[in-house]
Image 1 (cartoon, rainbow, N blue to C red):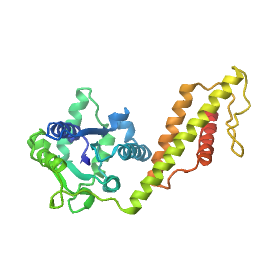
Image 2: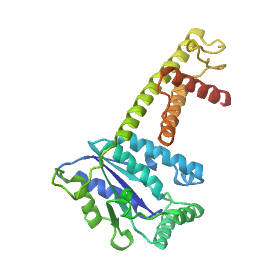
Image 3: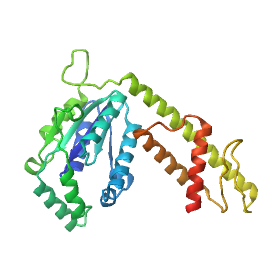
Image 4: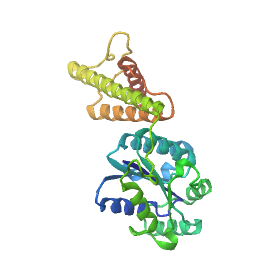
Length: 302
């Protein structure tokens, strides 16, 4: 139904704004399904997630993948994160367009001294807060949204340091109205993004690829479990998974929980890479080969 991108400086009231917006939406007559996606959804530590560029890039990939999986015409997704880079907001806008949903940005416009003060107060209360080095770096790199950009439009702006954040805040009311207004052929003030043929084909291709990946990795995992069961605790000199395919180099017992964890991580990594590059392999044999290579590397290092 819609994608809402919350953005703002660190400690500018974004999570409060997201919660207020979600509550206000659920109190409307339509009572839509609303989900907030943020760092805490994945139990991610904010300082570790923004400690360096690779960590930050990984965080954005995780959030973006979850948004892509969750977007539909039956729910409203709120992305509660810094979303401070305009290029990243453009990527989220592209996801909304591919899904054929509404899109808007809610900006918590707070001056840096207030953000710095609120961050310090959170630290004094032993609440999650940014380290000074990370805070200053994030403030320096923040790129303000501009309603002239299609990926920042429509733009609703809150002023938490001046007016606070309530369900009755003007920006929240305007956003709720925009997100829940019924659209027909005469509606001009609400824009539902329309997917292009290219984006529809890309999503279809990616969905097929990830389906094949899921099925192939499950088959490999079951083969390993079955081979270990037949060995009855004895040594294994590798597990064959099919003609012309590499064997799983396994020299120690590997329990089902560990195999499931490795499979989940592999699928997540594959999904992230498909958003920034070519889609993962669409045929089962290629998917199995990639998974076996990953298992051999992880089991050898582990």
